[in-house]
Length: 377
Image (tube, rainbow, N blue to C red):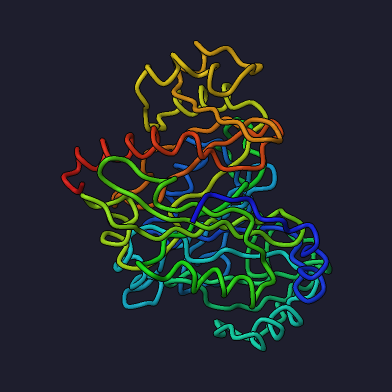
């Protein structure tokens, strides 16, 4: 199987016929300490306070802080009592993504459409109301313990959701230019990639737009395979990875070992000025994977003319790749929690619609150096 871009122009009409998804509504993490996690995302990544749910709002079971930056909303949730499902999730997986919420116009129709096409129910449509209006939500299971929640909020004017109050914090940080979620990558077990590709095709109307095999994504020691799924309007992209045979343990194998199941490997967030964004992130303590400086010796010969200064890119460790539509710039953080599981990608697209295939080898070698330091390669 060769890397290929699939023609999905004709398929977009079919996508929107039964499952129109407007975009990503929010991403919810189950974490061990929601207050400290919210402080981290505000301090280190420039998010702002948005909403809160907890004891002060009458919620006796869990505490959630919602932070926002442009179109990105993250919900950080921790249990308030022992023995809860949230606490068990954190015990099994460490901090990680539980919910990828999808913004839809009709959460009831979306739910029953998905169920009729084979989805497993997380919860049936519910109406949640307060003085700001009504939100309708419903949910389905996907790979591992990750769920999709359909969110219909056209009749709601509140800060976030009913049950939350506006979080007016005295501590405000400066945003760093993060705009929206470009894509989210899921890691699944050996032989499971095609199962979940089929799930997204049949249940949610997504289409496969790219495919990479173990010849594309490999080094001397490790390899993986990946297929990229996209919804009808192209606003949501879910690459799905599975491990491939290699001489040593791949990054996907390491993830599955420490996370304990399939799950979200990384979230790619877009910026319009990656040099400034990464500079700010480094100043705030975020650590990134680093490629050898020799990567930049042949950069222009590989990708052609770019607007950015190569020395500036080399100083920060930003990677560049080009496709037939343009080029992109990207960089990957180290893992952002105790377990070597989830991390972030910072990406700036200048026409390119691809995912940086030309950087895979350099990136994987950087990941392997981290694995070697951890003793998990």
